[in-house]
Amino acid sequence: MDYSNVQIAELLVRVFAGILFMLQGYDKLFHVKMSGVINTFVQDADRYNIPRPLLNLVAYYTSIVEFIGGILLILGIFTSYTLYALGLDLILVGFAFTYMSPMWDMKFVFPRLAMVVTLLLMPEEYNYFSLDQLLTKK
Image (cartoon, rainbow, N blue to C red; front, top):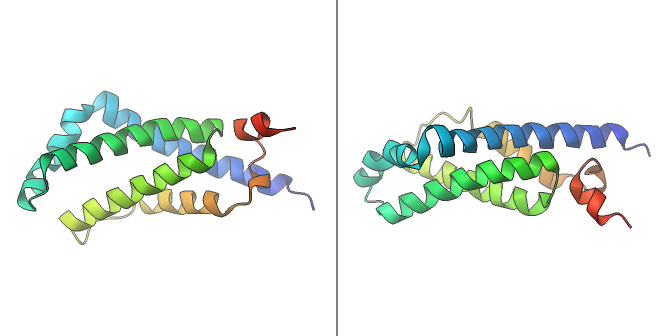
């Protein structure tokens, strides 16, 4: 069977997801800054009695994982572990937004979730154009 189209599809989904995550994390880390990210959620967190250290931990985790995870996805290195970390990121974001506003708009989160799940379900031989493949070739 010729896997070339599926391998290219995997590459497109992985790189596109990586770009989205990397730029989101970059914006949070370098433009908005962590204090701005945290300040965005302080009022809601206080209203729902969410401890400030937990808010800080989640804000730092999501921002760093999105930035570094995006870069790793683009390069295709440590792909499985990166997808697990980004999956946890999406669970935390989904839980936080739903807890604070049950009717929040999922238009930015759902496509990322769909791409992460798609990549997790793809067999490893489809991940051909990546540093993972290059480093594990025998």
